[in-house]
Length: 162
Image (cartoon, rainbow, N blue to C red):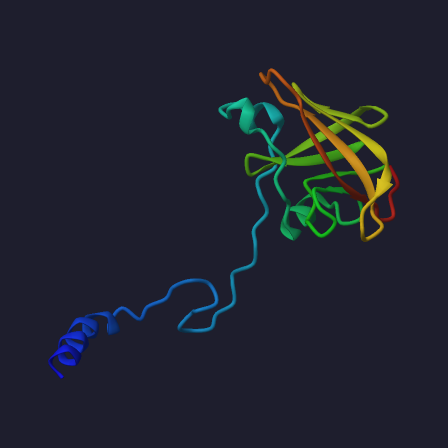
């Protein structure tokens, strides 16, 4: 009986710690605020103080796509179910998200885009994913980087074809 009383006394302070703030365990149900779009900046200012080894494509949100007007553009995705990291259209315009910024790029040649020292190349691959999406290679040459970054992913196109 003495052991039970000691155990109960030891556990009592923990009963007051029943505060779980993890997502999904909210005390009051609230909607998340709408996502805001990342700022749109030229490559020179967006990447000025970033280590070249950290200049990797990031996933865009619906708000980013709306800000760019790229809902119907071709979209490079790192996985078949991901949001895009690079968007481009048939008019020679595109955008990539790096360092939390949307960087517009312009087509220089077929499948080649740039903004300042940032260069991007795409190449369709002869394979498709499990969901039937066309595989694509994305190569990013960042300013001041010693090497290029290459990514294999998937492309989807809306009404504009690349």
